[in-house]
Amino acid sequence: MIRVTPTISIDESLLEVSFVRASGPGGQNVNKVATAVQLRFDVKHARLPADVRARLIERAGARMTRSGVLVISARRFRTQERNRADALERLVEMVRAAAQPPRVRRATRKPRSADARRVDEKKKRSATKRLRGSPRSGED
Image 1 (spheres, rainbow, N blue to C red):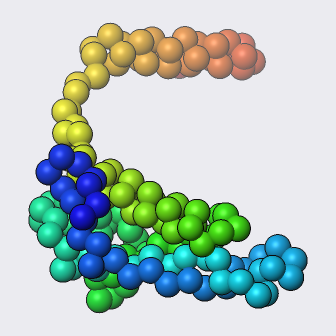
Image 2: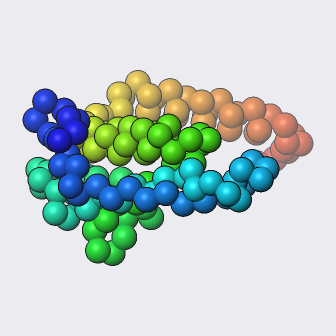
Image 3: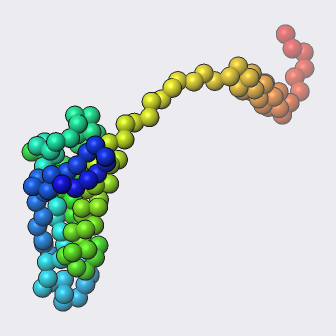
């Protein structure tokens, strides 16, 4: 079991780690050695609270498959061990972030002084523009 928070743990049997060849620069080594890690975590069958599971699925976005598996790719390092640790760390961080309930937004009212300030500014601007025009003779 991987400890995420004091109340949430991830069962390691739901993790599937596979090693693939990394793309990008790296010389001949990149063509020979499968150092990139693809970590698959079955979110649908994980023992997570319903709200945490829902937030995790929402946060995962395109990394979530239709069957409810979260796929994390790690290819930052040159060794399998470091990439595996990086993938696990990123999974734990995602679950930890999903465990935090979103902050409740409390509606606030703008102060009357803000409205008054806006109207005053509009009046000043209007007066400035009015003075720019040519003088009007014989109004009415």
